[in-house]
Image 1 (tube, one colour):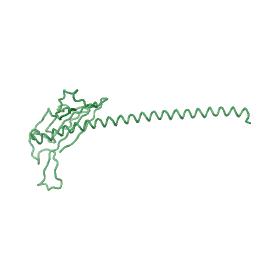
Image 2 (tube, helix red, strand yellow; image 1 turned 60 degrees about the vertical axis):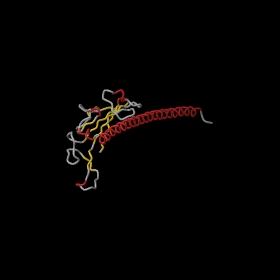
Image 3 (cartoon, rainbow, N blue to C red; image 1 turned 90 degrees about the vertical axis):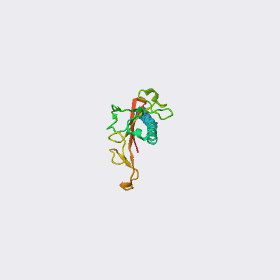
Image 4 (cartoon, rainbow, N blue to C red; image 1 turned 180 degrees about the vertical axis):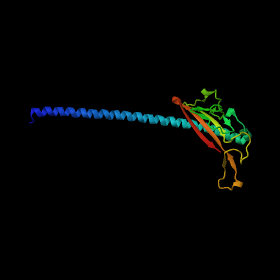
Length: 197
């Protein structure tokens, strides 16, 4: 049978071990909570990114639709600016200033409703889509001057349609740049750019 002194020592040792286990469990619980907070932040960031990408994709498609329609129906309209449609026949150096449009850029809101007609800058409230995003766009032709351009040597950036074709037989296509600005929840602002030819 163990002596009385040995029993007292064992009780103190059990208390010390249980305190150490309690501290370890507390640290594990804190780490778990921090991990869950980090996971929630990552999921939130991914959701915001997907929302802005979806809104930008719709705006790019609406701008592309207008550009293709004008190039087929009335190609001469692409020789001059169309402020109501967010179009410039010249390549502005940079349409972005910080997280806003640069001064003098005639951008338009992408209409979140059915149809491809853009909304004027003053119609901000109508540009809000069902997910809480607003998309605005600006289309630029990659030319240094306005007016009608010939496909070759026209002070424009051109895309060769058949890369393997000899220079004399080649056809060239105008290059257009579409810049999209997305305003999202929590005052987020994101820009996207696409090049079309």
